[in-house]
Image: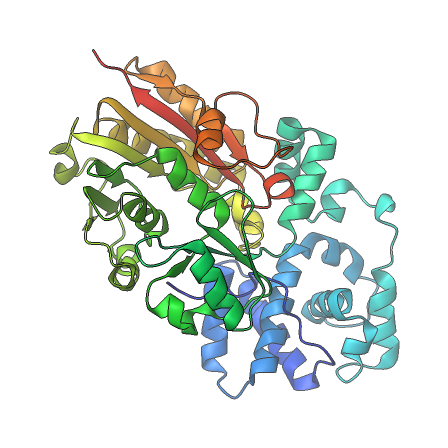
Length: 439
């Protein structure tokens, strides 16, 4: 499992940024803001090419770039008040926001540092909501329509905050109390996550991949919301299960451990590169019931041979990823409404193909890390309108039964589940649970 994403949690260094480091920040920003590739990949590539940068300099660069991405629209609106080059303005505002004018004292003239800090004191009430919350107009409008003014603003504000580091305890190798003790012995601040029985939340952004408990497979990095999707699937010992869009296999491993290494879990994905990332994780996990298969498409012949034979199928569909903006803030600038429309059609096709694998009485879970209705309930309703083999189950009720759901913590109304960062402190996740009728 890779370490947490660059920029995945707040980690601005204390003290001041050096002039040379600021130049590197601006250079990296120039590459990232082209939006040709994911920001974490661009930043990682930049850091590999500049090996002379120290640990502190790298932290300045990564944290500043991701802070700019989170609040780009706000910073662009305010930047005209600063006498500096366009990209430097954005960097100065991000650093002043998180470190104050004192953080800029070595890198720029005092007057410019003070001006950057002063600009940030602009009355938020004087700004349009989409500007204040640094959201594209189309995204703000979508969320306003779906959630209303108050909830949509709370949601966007939460998505502009760095995500915590969540871990999943691998029940094949450890127990939560044992893992907590190991993390605390390593000097980390760690607590159980509020919902998942497998989850641990760690303060800060430590590199847990160097810890013995990680190397031995006792823990994996996985957001609590993602863990809850595996609980909704409810895979049992000895069953045949498929993770239809497995990617790097985080949910695959959670499902395999839930089944205590029995039965069989197929990890399907159209990208062999993504599945390659599962191999070292699988080796650490101690699981022997996982089979990874790179497929040509959702209509691959190897999938057709399993038609009607599987007990449970998870479709974690390719999506806009807008529920993960805490970790991937560049997505709100890279995605467009036309992309979401195309994704809807693709998601519906994948769901229909995956549904053929489920045996009568079996369970199908459709999930995304999106917060948009078009990718979520819109896909599920279109699927249900096109066939009669499936019924919709109460996802919220199933989740309550599978967890010690905290008293007072709300669940989405209706049979479909929506997890939101400002409510549940998870990434934005959607899930619908369907059951194939017995003839």
